[in-house]
Length: 600
Image (cartoon, rainbow, N blue to C red):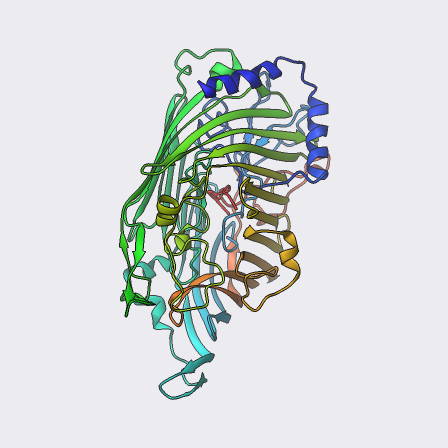
């Protein structure tokens, strides 16, 4: 079998002597040399896709800290790094997502918080006063978290044109509540910001709400699916991961109030029952994946044979056909030392009524340093893709593509739009090779940096992701994520066309950024910037729009208590007696977190 051949080839290489210091140095050198990095990490999500967490289940905040074989030191406590004054020259191994907020559209506070925000919101063609009561709760030393809010928009001024009155709306609706935010059942999903228990790669992880993207397994079927890429259509998604030493599963539902999409992976470690000493047998894992959209659009409904029809919610109306995907993957670790962790994998997945694709990949993790650990994650994939198949079918842009595949720059109300399912099954993309590269660097709870790049051999279209977050300071937190898809040349970013299709923030780009500044113990300044999609009723199509939101928040954060009874300071790392920063633990990893992983 191709999977066994692939694992054996890498295992053969693994039998050569491994220099831990050289491997770490090479990893640093490779990243610094500009290795095409991909932010869409094929993260281990549960065995087969989790870092054999059943064997090493220590956790430390969003970044999982793995006790190493032969390390007599106890596993790190939750929310902490190396213990105070620890003399072990090899600190606990850092694994898991290095960019916690990658995949999220805004920051999440780390502490219990009660507050009221009031500010300015630029949405669509109007300016609003934005008011929102906020409540965040943390329990079980931060392992269990809830976030609630009731966002209310009161219009101030609009640039929209009133065709009935033949004039600009202007201040005509000043003071009126935007009722469109609350006129359907799914709109009430706005109230639930998040519910989280545990962290990705814990034995039990539950996440529900609007904040986080989702990746299933290695991402062959679903990678960084963003349920709320449409800024005006809130979805409260659900993800549940559970596993033990032998078996486990991951489950994702796109909307708990009105679901149409489901994805699941079940996995087994076949040799775990006999507990072998051999690393490959010990970590060998086999997973089976299935996913479906049971109401996937097939053909958009038209009025007068040319103009697209909208439903009662102002969404595109379409005839539907179920679409399903299946997959199988195999993985095993071939190197595991104090500073290096390497795992190859094979993934075969495809559309039920279409074609299949094969991915050969390797995930490498490298830790450098003792007092301050610099963690590196590198993912390399080579792919062969059938014409009627696309890897990571449920991706960041799926909720737009399911109606209008790759329709950036749409400006005409009559221009034909074709759903993704129909494009793949009827037109195809051609048999092709492909690649995916990802690189991340992070210092736990201090900084995270990720890049991603993917493409195919029969087209110039390239996807790219970049992400930076700096959560280290107690008085300020910032993050930014930038997505590009389908660019034919990076020179496109240098100029702007009338269509708006190119340019650094054109229709091929999606961006999210956020910042939170503590002005006083009871006063915070919050900001959010986005460039993403929403339904434009004037052209009856999705439009890529810019918006921002700035507010002052009056409230208070109640710092979490450590297990020793001492108070955390809301994010700033403490120092041990040698000056080394301790890991304080971030908001639970979002792949799945901000998922955590996903494709551009």
